[in-house]
Length: 214
Image (tube, rainbow, N blue to C red; front, side, top):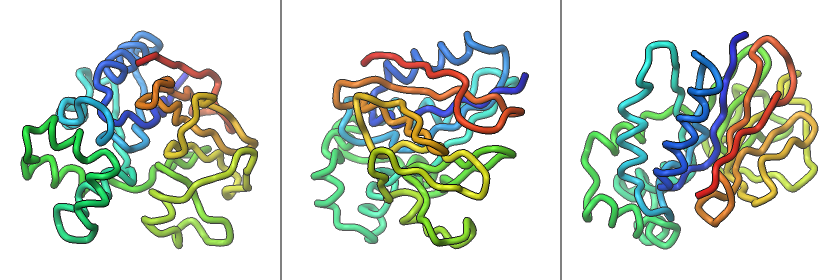
C-alpha cells in the first residue's frame, strides 16, 4: 500500500515538526510527505524548520514535497519589494528575523521563492489555502492557492478529487468537510500539528489523522 502524508501549518514550531516526522516514519517504511506551507513566522524557530526542510528526507524511501504558503509569500515579498516589510513583520516576521539573528541567508530566500503552489495525484489536490470555485484548475492564481479561505462546512466538486489544505487554523482541525480536508490544527496558537494520511489507491478523504501537541 502506497501512502501520502499531508502535514499542516508549522509556523516555526520545530519540535512538533520533528516529532511528527518521527511518527510518520514509524507509521510506514516508505511514502510521500506533502508539507502544506507556512513553515515560518509567529513560532520560535523558523530557521531550524527551513534548515530541516531543505535537508530533506533522511531515507531514499521517502519523498518530500514542500508547497508555498502565504507566509513564505509575505516573507519573500518583503525582501524583493513585492510586499511591504511592515506587513510581514506584523504577521510573525519579527519572530522569524529573531530566529535568524536579523538576516536571512540568500539560499533560504531562494528556496522559499522557488516552492511550488500545488501538488496533484490520481485522487487528490494539495495546496496551502484552497481553490476558487468557477475557475478551471489551470486558471487558479497563486493568490487563490495561497490565500483563499473556506467557511466551515463548505465543499466543492474539485474535478472529482479530494482537496487537502491548511491555512485556516482551528483547534478543531484536522477536519473533513465533504470533498475537502483542512489540516491546519493551529499548532502555533496552542492547538496541534496535524497530519492527514491518505491511501494513494483509494479515492476520497484520509484514512487516519496523526496529531502532536506543541
